[in-house]
Image (cartoon, rainbow, N blue to C red; front, top):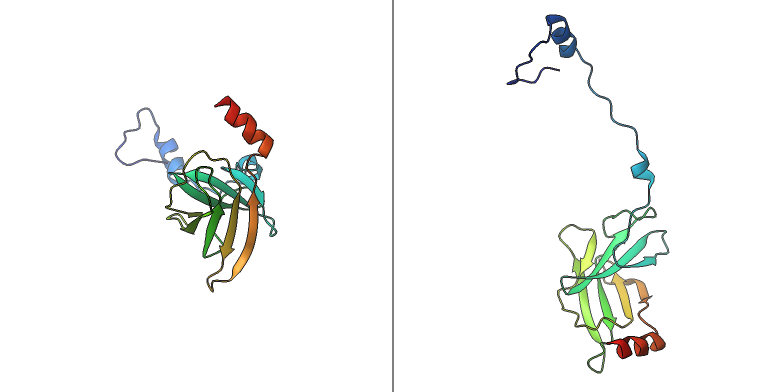
Length: 154
């Protein structure tokens, strides 16, 4: 193949003619990279449809990412959601609305989640009509005994 603007030193006329008649490249076959499972960011949760969710704290707020069965990121299949948790530093529950992120592969909240991040989170996902499609997903935090050990170490 001849690249315009670049001189080809030492190339014969025969090789130049051969390069000009190259057939178009065929698409590459799937590699082992495509078959490998991806990595889920945050707490991994299996879904009923065979996919996965990944709950993490990104930029101070919750981020709920969606993955397929091979743990590769996919577009969200819900309209919105809400996260509910009971923080350590005050009484009562906190709620954070989850709305689609810019890339369309996650739901994110702008509400800051104050540390320590030792709690259970309940997530409800809603469709476009506002009906709950997945409810009471429980993302485990530390057990009571683990919390006692953690507080004794800090």
